[in-house]
Image 1 (cartoon, rainbow, N blue to C red):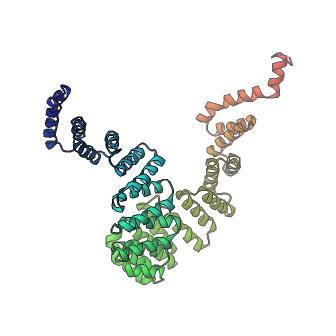
Image 2: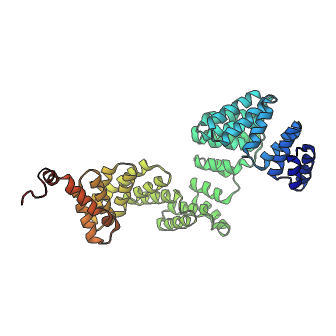
Length: 427
């Protein structure tokens, strides 16, 4: 490297170029050597070599800005397709997604034929999807499917997008088309899963070779004992599979064996503790048992995990109508309302929490904070005094009580008269 760099500094570019090429034989993926060679190739007017070296850099380091910029300069007047494709990649690396989309679109327009346009179409479709322009993404993948019909990924991507926009039926249709026209037998299990979700267990049973999927299809067809028999055969190899436990829970649920169903849900939860399915299954069991309180509590938890806070709050409020003394529920509702910015409504539930559990530290602190926020310093002091009785070393109280007392003193009528007549008033 030292010899090559010295030759380069002495402007002996041909010799430096030859030295770097020797080094590249031993380190074919070295970005520093490739960069030196590409730079010297441009100096020596070996443009084709420069293209190869910069392209190799992007193979090794796809986010290399310099290589993108140099290739863009090379292709600007030579090949508009590659120019816009590379410029789109550069804009994407720089998080300028709207510019990248425009560049990919121009690259498609400048491609010499549909096959050359495919890389730009894939990138354009991916960006559309990333920006939430799902209809545009679908249109682009459909165009891709006309020219890259042997690529199963296109159909899988279309199925995913159709499910988000038009629903399961459209997703199923595109996979059926791929299976029929493209001969993609690997779609069988994926399609079987879609059929299950679309309440078509008979079709799922025709396609699947998977024991757990077969059992699920049979359960959905009310052939519980047949499905159970398959499950038991698969038990040894599937006991660590969360789907096995969810299916066993489904079997017990359908047979009215609710306690056994709960046990299987607990086993499922050990394997996937953050799954919303845990609470969905529990909610359905409580509904069957006629336990409306726990049914709606679990629907609330289900929607929290799914990120739908508004629905969750409604479920928790429904549960509250069945039991308005459950401390955990009241605390959950208050915290959710507070997180959604409704502090007034949240304070009502913290008040309720304080009534039921007078020594609840969280409720007293939240009520003190709320009272201070609306200018009721005296109310804040009362809650903090109660909190101090329960917890004399409470950090919140120690940090704030005296400050609020001073604020209350300085903001009342006493402070007004004191300011006018001075501290000797009333003596």
